[in-house]
Amino acid sequence: MSIEIKGYIATSADGYIATKDGSVEFLTPYQAIDCGYNDFIQEIDIVVMGRKTYEVICSFGGEWPYPDQKGFIVTSDPSLDLIHSSLSLWNQGVHELVDHLSQNFEGNVWIIGGTQLQNYFLEHNLLNSLEIFVMPVLLGEGIPLFPSFKSNVQPLKSIQAEMIENTIIKTTYIF
Image 1 (tube, one colour):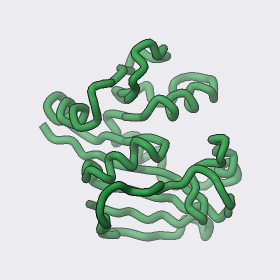
Image 2: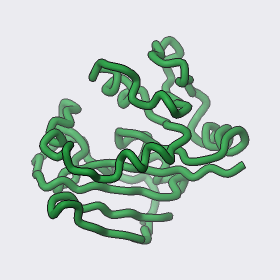
Image 3: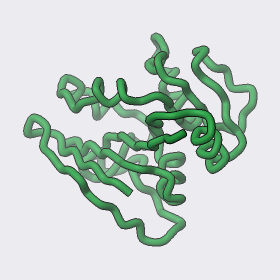
Image 4: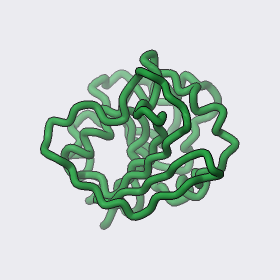
């Protein structure tokens, strides 16, 4: 079986994915711009996120936004309530999760949300590609896209950079 692990994330021009309190309201003015999300999500078979990202998504209310994908919530809290039947808790470690996915599934995996889990995947060379959408706004402070790495330099190969509606810069990297 074969899986492809992807990152797909928005950031401010100064490199923050959210304000200090976790708000992503800075993205709201750009929601009408088509950045290819609908095509992207249709190609995703599995979503993986940490507990914090899961709780933020749940706080938005409404229906679970990924009902067509199998979902894994990486957490050490075995009592976390799951709001959709497609979701499972995972507490056995990230490398073990990647092994589990590789042995039991085929297709595309999206590492959703926060920097902690996504950076673990980056530090351990577990991502196959990363799409970054740079929004034309400066936050000044907040949750950084890339907090300090614990590993050596990570060379990236840019395979595409484009301007979307003269507003958002999309850069795609492969590893």
